[in-house]
Image (spheres, each protein chain N blue to C red):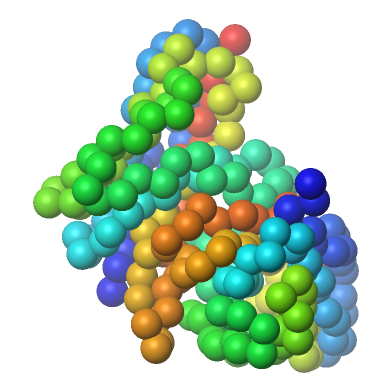
Length: 115
Length: 114
């Protein structure tokens, strides 16, 4: 059974610092991984979808990497801003019945950027 | 530019009551799903649908019912509410299978069962 872990559960850093969020998964037979952002009281917003063949995907100040062999993904945030404060979740596809899929989510890292 | 719309945003029920959580998307997505989010447990899949008329169970389907009569709508019914169903419920959609495309989420329904 696929398990997705995100450590630490919470992280506080001063504004302007670069930071890395971690995601690990137990079953390396995945073909992609998604990173989401969740603001308080809101739904999830997809940030990056990284294919297993890509190893890295970038969007603005965000860079996600994926290493299937080690069962790990990282989300790098450059020059952090108070607006980056949110909970960040990673998710991997898991097979259901009849070839359908669901996403298996980590429990997230709550990030606070201190002005 | 509505995306995924969930109603209501908040609801308080008494044990044993029934209700329907509404979800609608305007992106012509085939795949829709319902998750519940509980502290320390992440998001868990309740039911999903790969197209109009096709639904299937997820990880935690007991006590919930769904139907998909149109591409746009995917309501979730609580048959007889229990305190264990107190949670935040999210509806999500995508063009195809859950893992293949970025998932679009609604803002959630916060449900309390007394």
